[in-house]
Length: 169
Image 1 (cartoon, rainbow, N blue to C red):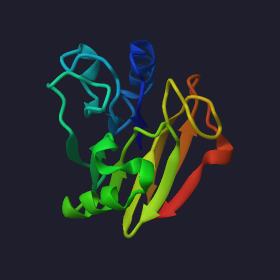
Image 2: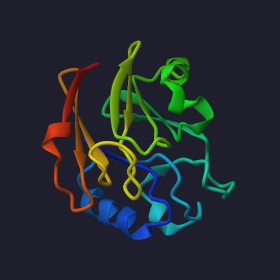
Image 3: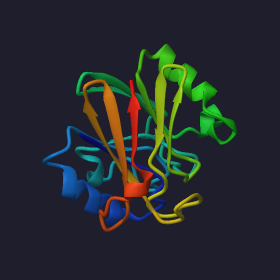
């Protein structure tokens, strides 16, 4: 199981709360950018993070690839790949990097979509949601038997059951 958050826009406390809840149980914790925190902040110890369009610290990377639970995962904010207009460029980037999963943010809309053979996941914004259910969200992703279960949670760590998605790899 791994955790994904994005677009916290200066809310260090929520990043810390999510980290504290999962640091000892998750195989990885990801932040898809727009944290607006310094890249050298100690909060990032144990979290894989990338830059977003609102992050001006040059210490962040634009794209990171990690292997987690036997799968290659691409992490980027998405603004450089036009995710507001579709996920084809993001999917191609994942293909080029031989990744099964692409994690992204930027739109502030919780999303799970399979494009070609890549699963694209946006955890929504943990601070400023723009789409249904119009509450801040992050995601927990579990992998079992070539299936991904993506659960979206609110700031109080409650699962939003109606948003849960199961998708085959």
